[in-house]
Image (cartoon, rainbow, N blue to C red; front, side, top):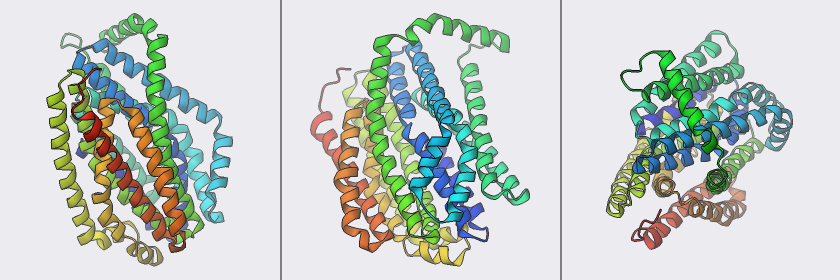
Length: 437
């Protein structure tokens, strides 16, 4: 799961490096604003991945294959509905988002270019969240890794072709991602269809007949009112939690745009570093989601608590490794991503935040995974609301005279408060509580 997750921010780093070596900072800045506008939707819909993983893991613990398939189908249905709706409303959504983003004329121009292409990939991007979440919940971590590697290799190859060979600049990066997103859906569904068959069912015809039979059998259950209400109640709390997180990320991006082209390019690089840290640590958290969820489904209190202890150890160790990496090689990593002198100089002034962020943030990444496995979405929601509106924005307001440093200081406190509040709730309320799900 760690290797699977690392491939995601590595691709973002390649996108940044490709645009960061063009002759102007606004190419990178425009794509950063555009990517934030699109990924705001995909990250906001992260509940599709989280709830799918948690519910599937619990179904696995209960050895209920039909329940697991229902989770997958409901998730895909919701993903396509959300993606299709955003495509229909794209003019309103993009105009509003770009207006809020601000930035220079060049930033606005290239952000619009990026969004006009990427918006068409939303149904695929959201479906990928469901597919990967379902596979993770079924302990198919290697399958997830290979699907992500294949998808990202497609994206990387097209990035280099479209930008360096065809000179499509920002449009090339967006087009590469669009194609890769739909490729990921095809690869993921192909794997799921074949992986669920017995050895005697080798032909494509027999596979399709078998899957169609399952769909007919569970059609009535798919739209069962009580199950749908429970599904959306769970996702509502995760949605609110993710919305708060996204508000912070969007605020950092948009506020950076108002501080100038060099600052937003700097924050694009720093945010890629943050994603490298978070996705790496999320690999351990994703493992905790599955193992905690399975133990929860088995009503095994001892096993659940043991998983948390082991995951906490490895999370702390990897956080220290990340901190050491940026302390030793931070300037070198910046040089890999851009050769624009002003952006390099600006980013070097902020790289020390990447040294302390892994230590401050590792707690929130792990316990997010633990509470997803427990399906305690309300706790995650409440923790995020407190960290966002009780810490991030008040801290930024107090430190805004420090400019971009104030933004990153506020974000650091935000991560710390999230982790501390979740850990406190787990050890104070959950650890010795009998499993009753």
